[in-house]
Length: 233
Ligand code: C5P
Image (tube, rainbow, N blue to C red; front, side, top):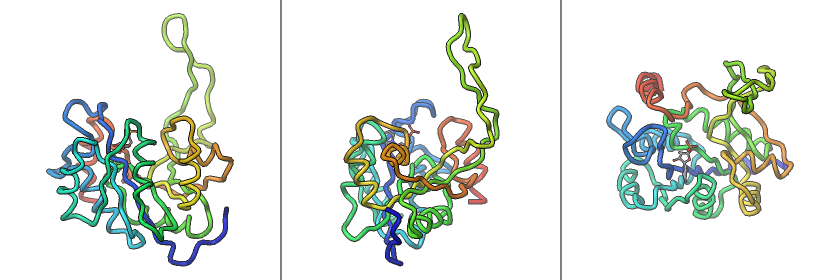
């Protein structure tokens, strides 16, 4: 599973963008929310398309918005748009089924990480190309993390996890195409990321340094932060 891929290692990027984005408050699918006048998805795809290894991009859009997303992205990059599913994992599976032939490496990248720099996309692809079957970008955890459980009234602390061994995980997550296809085909339960499926299959998942710019735009404050970061990304 760690054999070196051919030097070209052509890359497809799957972009699950079919989520409702309820945590951002009312206002339609998150990927279509505006950041400085443009949908998050446009910001994300522009950066994906600027990564030199990327040969194909497949977006999973909300089922009701497939045609609108095609029209939105046509001027930005050559993109295949498919209807997404009820859960993120299903959206990824549907996008994976639309990957064209001849692709060795598949990256899965959340539309919500709209400011992810092309350099991070290349770094993840390069690590897969170098022989790692699954690669994730990570950042150190800045907060102290406690494990909690229900108490008589409020939650109570069960323990403190050693912060030094914790990482927060970003996208794009990169995979050998055959590995991602195999774990998705075998997936029984739904996980929040694709590397989790690889872990469950007992294969190694390798970390590369992430980027502060790859923040996930989830809550209203993230939109304000992202707007402030636009001039550096
Ligand atoms: O909900 P969450 O923020 O974890 O979603 C991460 C990414 O997965 C988002 O880009 C969202 O659009 C996408 N997603 C999807 N299909 C779903 C749910 C989420 O493509 N059914």
